Image (tube, rainbow, N blue to C red; front, top):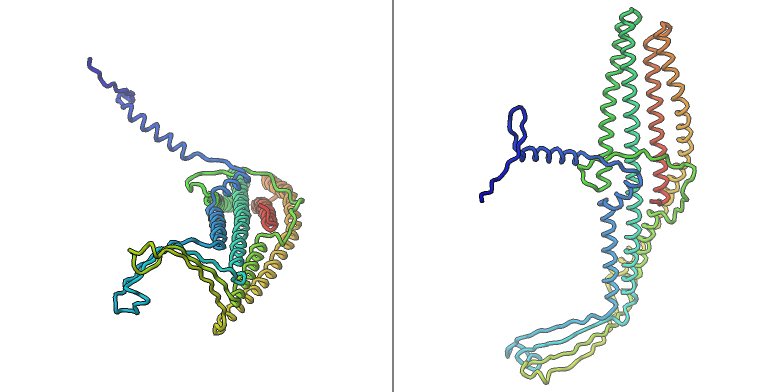
Length: 432
């Protein structure tokens, strides 16, 4: 029995198209459709996605994990290490005194040593590592706050650009309708060529502003994708979330601010560093021991097995001022950190007070612009109707149109300012 391969074809204008070609074309268009897919996300979804994928936050988390391992390492230094040590020395006569070398020496030993008293240097190192670990954790929380603020700022800027884009599109529609009216009136002798030129110039300028706003919108989306940590070729749209409640402000506890906590840990680290430096003035008592084989003739191994214990005391007498200068540096580091803390407190307090004061003004401006938009729309319609009736000039219509656009843009910008201001207040309070 002979099996023959069957080929499916499709006739198109009397041409036979292979089925494989059809499948390739279909796959191509399907891939383009999937690639062009756009995801719509809310603000909270964007923040959650950034906390999961943002590279700077991942870096802070890796530093925290590194500090945890460092703490475990330093804590292990409190216990005596066990080492295996071996050596062989060949020194033929008459190289050295035969009592000392006797033609060489060998050793196979387990050794250990630990300071019995070091003035608190080891415990200071452990405390420092714990402080660094705690600081790294605060740094992670600060990174989460900063990433959340960045996401909110970019997200709100996209909403601003999108709102402005809508205003620009409506502006072009109004100007195009007005141009159509002018052309009709021009045929009847009720409009001049100058009126047409002025409206055309305004339309061209509006088109330029529309293109610029569209570019700003796309730029904002690219920035958001970058901060989110998702593939850069992924297309997203943002959802117009409800305006945050500007009446219920978060509590401002300056001492729990991440910036203050980071400096507080820096000060604590400097104080521990000072204690470690001061411990170098104190004597160090160390005990060490070994057990194994040590001798001059390996074939006498059974006679060379033994152990030894060594107790040593180191007392610093004179360091040419090096230790005193190091201690002075640590004391100055503490004073410098205190000054940084004071500066940071004042800056945060000033920034908080300024933000709260501005909040009231921005809310008032937003309300005023909202009321003015209605008046500006009525003014534009009135000017347009009066011009059609011959009691107003084209310049009045264009002025009313520009006034309407300016008021709408001011409202849109003030809404953005309010959102960003609330995001900044949330960041100052240390809230995610």
